[in-house]
Image (cartoon, rainbow, N blue to C red; front, side, top):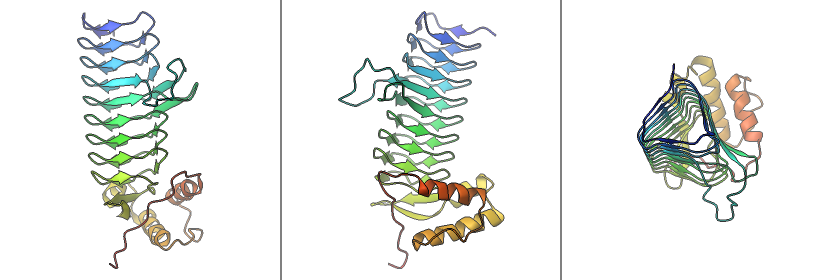
Length: 257
């Protein structure tokens, strides 16, 4: 199928568009941008030249992809990228910046949903099937796993990590790492319990859930996980905990108080 491009849209001659791409009024696609098949680009949306986008992404009006990093030391001549997978939805006012590192990339996976005015900063990594509610903002070099839910107006400090299947309560400020599979919230932020609803929706139930519940209790006691059954979830959890962290871990709520 051929693409449908509104006559008021600007598309640079060196931009590459796949098949069946829709481009709305006054949208801008700069030189060098790569847009996969079946993408929909809304009115007044901007895709800068250092964007590589997969298939079936939907960009709503006034969203901007691949802008300069908000880093005062960044040299705009540095070649870097914003790389995006397939099937993502970027709602009105969403922004994502390219990386600060030469030949580096800010990376967004597939099948994510980014609500109004949310933001992904330079050099970040976001996994698959992750949701940002309205006004979520993450700082540079943040790593977010897959199947994560970020509540409205959550803000995340640079270099933090948020593990897969975690849920962050709305308006929470994150300045340390968030453990996979957990619910976190409060001021200061603390881990409350397992993300029960999210795990059930992901099919992590039965024995696998029981093992994770045991892992949660051990982590609260700062005890080893080595005696646990090595399910797929525990394997990921142990690998995540063993990886380098620049921020350390948020603590747990003390239910005894």
